[in-house]
Length: 370
Image 1 (cartoon, rainbow, N blue to C red):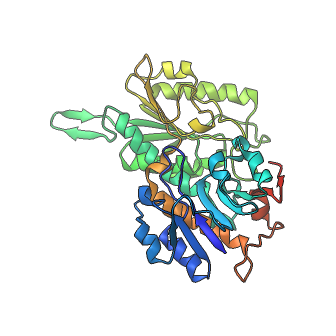
Image 2: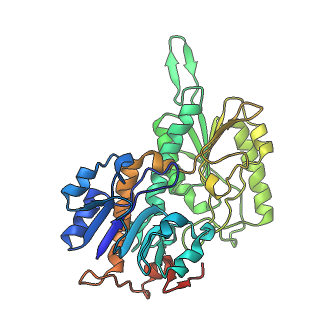
């Protein structure tokens, strides 16, 4: 099978979908691998590293000729889709609910797999790109907050006096939130965290942070079968808003990570809450690309409000640590692609497989329901 590793074209996207480590495995299995020239440079991978493990290098004009399986980090835009061979397969992060050129997938009879739809099951852990990339983003979010915060993170006791530690509030305790907690604690901050799922309390407290919660009716489930947060009742949301507003007034740094699959990000920090925060405090909104947990955030921008709060829309944090993020992403992709071939190495996905079925969004000229 000819596997093509395409370069990324989205602004700010520095990751690559395959590394020399994963390319070597495919070549050893008998596959041909063609990599776009310079595809890995932003992730600190020179073309020579791919060539050394047996990959072919190609420019844009010859990249897709004969491609059977195309790998990308972010789904291709229309100009790229036009170059893909009809009937080929495509693996990428699509954000399928919002993917504008989705009809192209059917028109070109592409078989498309959306990596963000990989189920959160034990069997799928090695393929879980959302978790691996969220880990990177949670770490980077704290470093970005420290960049904008005009004070120290840890407590310092000096001859000139004592400096109080920063107070960090994490909203949303998924993978990114947990990594943000761990990183902020390592930097010496006082950390508290909120999540609608009471089951996350133990994880938060195991990292040395304080868990804050809104009392709930035990009969109301806050977690989906896939392990994600569920949209809560209007009454719960009102009590949640009051609690977050109270804690936000005390916080120096707030990192928001809350997402609901297939829906807009929940509103956690409305403008009136930000208006009540301390001058010099910082908000890092990781959910900005899904509408934002704070409506003031703008993708890849930092704005300063009238009361001196810096609000940063940070939707591409994993791409800022492209070398390690790519290494993790590529391993996830390699594990997933193992499901797409038969023992002889031919492209032959088993659509009865629960992981393959969950991720397939187009096949044989038809779009799959989302």
